[in-house]
Length: 149
Image (cartoon, rainbow, N blue to C red; front, side):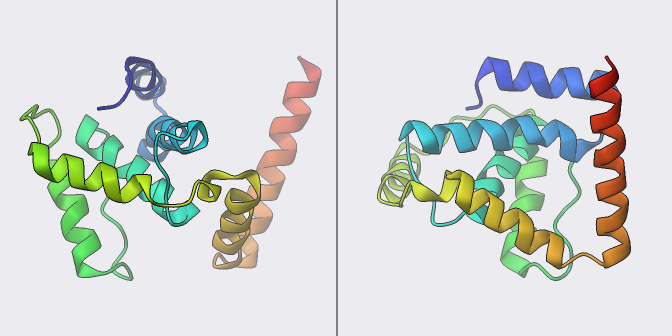
């Protein structure tokens, strides 16, 4: 169950008209914090992000399903999570316990700054140069605007 603070942040983003991926960012951030606090681990930064997105879908963020390049199992899971939005049925205790135990055994380094940086760079490399350039320009504009105020 996501923390109240996380849900409030996502709702605030939705009220401001931000994209679903921005709304989901609050859940991903919470998941990264949980790993850093030692609540559980993750095998990779990608897994940590996936757990956060899953929580966001279950909380009602209207995230699109993963692209066709993702496995059928991943897409099905995302669909299931979206369908569960708003439904507060209690999860199976044994399944929940098993999932927590599995995650507890995973390494905590998946949420390190290095791991997240490595993931971001790898993800950026998959995008075309034009998209990377546009993102860099937008970041520069944002920085300039922040420096003014």
